[in-house]
Length: 196
Image (cartoon, rainbow, N blue to C red; front, side, top):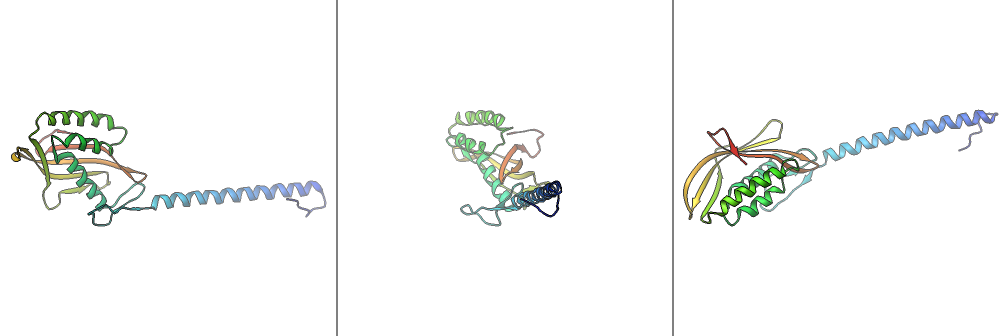
């Protein structure tokens, strides 16, 4: 870039430097605006999910998801957690572990392994869960916790031997469009403590 606006060579060099500095500042500002626009577009991008037999408006964005998606995930999680036989429990718990956050994965892996070992000792025992009430699922205001009210039946040789009303609390977060479970607790409705 050569400017010849001035008669002196030094004045032309100073003018060129000023013009280059101005161009650099403009380029930097355009880059910053472009970066912000890209970030905003990524935050507002939604992935439309259409699993088999799904209904409703299912979508996941960077840090949020639709109510219908959260309901489907809660149904999947409670089913994997409490609808099992001695033959299927371990495989279901391993599949469920994939959704746990790295911070809590090891603790739940140990807990699920212990529960599966206890279940496998009694081949005729199985479990089933049914959501109960007009609104069995509640989503917290901050959209980070799901509470499901359900009836859990213990079956021996196909006969119900014990029926318990439970509350399953799922604490989760969504990061880059993926749902991570942070905590999963099952409580008897009148009990103080639960188990994973």
